Amino acid sequence: GENVEQHPSTLSVQEGDSAVIKCTYSDSASNYFPWYKQELGKGPQLIIDIRSNVGEKKDQRIAVTLNKTAKHFSLHITETQPEDSAVYFCAASLTNTGNQFYFGTGTSLTVIP
Amino acid sequence: DAGITQSPRYKITETGRQVTLMCHQTWSHSYMFWYRQDLGHGLRLIYYSAAADITDKGEVPDGYVVSRSKTENFPLTLESATRSQTSVYFCASSIGETNTEAFFGQGTRLTVV
Image 1 (cartoon, rainbow over the protein chains, first blue to last red):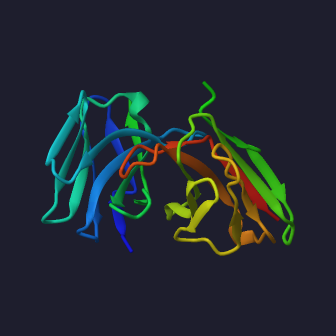
Image 2 (cartoon, rainbow over the protein chains, first blue to last red; image 1 turned 60 degrees about the horizontal axis):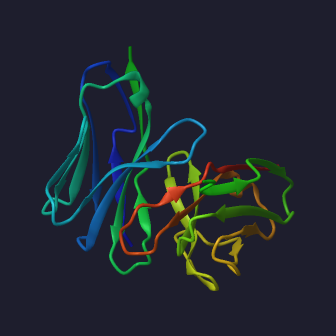
């Protein structure tokens, strides 16, 4: 099955700096890559996603890049704010597998005011 | 708009007891999922359902049973709880087309003593 690896496991940045989280996947058939943000005591919530026919996608301060050849994708958060502090999960999904997602192990991001 | 709700939010049970975690969604989403979240493992799929009366195993199904007699409900039962099943359990739902957003509940923290 699919294996998703995520790095780093923890990340601390100063407010206003950028944060980058990287994920790799193993199955070249994966074609959908969502990113979820989980705040303390809550369920994960989708923040951005990218499909395999797109190399980059932006939404305000958040961007995701995908390199299909290398089988890795990254989340970029610019101008970080304290409310960005949370755990972030990447995931990969294979077509025709019942909409199953394979998640990375998570990155705990702390934005220091 | 209630969305997706899980109950109970917290549960302590003894080894060997049967326990059922409830999940209810108000969107009429076709797909529903159960994940467990453990430190160092991220989110792992236990079972999923593509529609009422259709269920299938995920990555870690052993020791769990699910049913889905109605589209809106997807209970997860631990037939004989073990300490290794101590975890945070998340239910999720999605519209049902391939590669669409999954909406997560608030989670149930289960402790098996």
